[in-house]
Length: 64
Image (tube, rainbow, N blue to C red; front, top):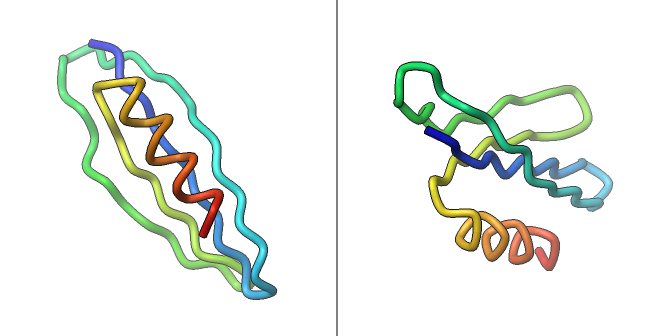
């Protein structure tokens, strides 16, 4: 199964970055969405099975 991960980085200075990565799951399961806190930013990982939905989500994040 192929899925898409939208990675979003929200920096403390207001900058936002977002991009899409694609992955293949050997066992057919999609990972759970997760987030990480760093010293200067928060990072979010959101997973999608539909590429179009991932693109829409990524575009929306870039406009944040």
